Image: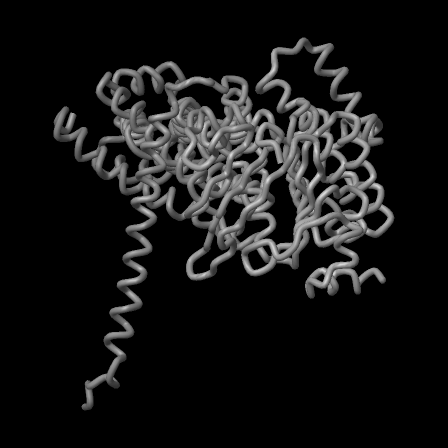
Length: 247
Length: 271
């Protein structure tokens, strides 16, 4: 793999909480424009990896490079500049519950971009149209269903047009139909904006829809990586266990 | 009588108090560091002026209905309770001065601070606690917005600004409450009553009080934010953050009040 193509480079990362080792020397490289999926059981450390990539958690050892910049030990000001290129979709959307949908979407634009009121309005409406929620623009998050919250979270993550988007369980807690809709939305938006992404999930339907490369996380490290078709034929016991769920 | 404890019982008891003491010290250290961080941030851009203004309205102005009732009743009760005693010593004419000094120096700031702590500190603790457990604080951080500046500095600053104003409002209402009681019982005129009030108050009664009120505001905002920011264990933690905020803020208000009184007496004498 050409090093210039690598947008996220994780090398030998270890992270523990007390006596519990969550990540143990984990490595992965994410190419520009690719959509990688990390599969794994609940509580195995998938979200810990995402939070480490964006600097919310600090690993004990290893290196994480995003766009050629070392995240671990980075100063807050530089980290904040880097974060402006990263969108993050939280497991439960994490919408600001004191703000309307409009204000949630406006927030990153007002904080970091010099846009006119008209431009802000245009972008907010455009993003909401892409996720099919124009009518909900003035609703409070408490008035939205789980699926609608996820859509708004998705719209907020991509409204500043980031190069990278990290999805933390984008379909968790949704019914299969809404889950599929969200997965298809993620795939369409990524194609539309040319986004590089990492999605952590334990949902195989979502994986099938969005993944270029799939990693299986177990015991703190990746036990397998490959395409969805490769993985279907893999001998890895965890991969087999996942596929048993849908075959 | 057998006074011997079973082996290990004393050690267990000591261990319990030791862990409680260490936890309390951790809390003191945490709040101190949090306060120092506030001063490191407050003069540094970006200045979230609109957020401060919003919280001044949310945390301060919306406390006015409750404080109105408390202020008026506090003055009424003080006058009703003090009048018979003062009359017994032939000092009934000192009542306006006594009310003014008691309210402005002590009761006004402390009662206002305790009431605002109950309403606002718990509100901040619960709000930030809820934001913490629903990952909204993480969402701010990944949006490249410093959550400490955006959430903690703004709320604490709003409390620092609003508390002296709210206390002045309560002071006025309590003194006015005293007048209502006086006019009902002794036909005192408003002009005479307020002339007595104004002549009894000196610059030294008011100036240390303003600083004290701002300090109480700082305690209320900072402790609410600290408890909320350090919430863990989901919704149970949110409830605990709200309760702990009120308890810790109230205790700190009373403790700091005592220190400020000692300091004021040391610097300016008994007045």
